[in-house]
Image (tube, rainbow, N blue to C red; front, side, top):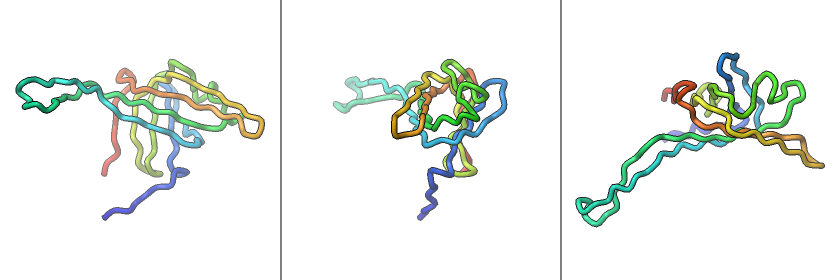
Length: 136
């Protein structure tokens, strides 16, 4: 049995806009969702049981962070809607899933008794590269 769990604070996200250098962000957390289209192909040949086949793979993620005035999101990391590039979502300090992405949304939030925060949504974009899973 394996019990090699990882702490979230050891799992950053690295962003690399097309043509730029990779930058590791100090984040609060991220979500990463893999899903695919499912097509219903039920017919008389499926014996009265629903039949399905898979379609296109889709990946979406949200990265949450605090605004760092020394590294503003819209500056060097280019966290701006429409920017294409590569994101590395770390599962451990040395293992990451590489996703080619396009930034679809950037959200800023400020509250009286809290730090200024931002988040941004990414979606897979095969025009920016390939999905690469870490080795076992």
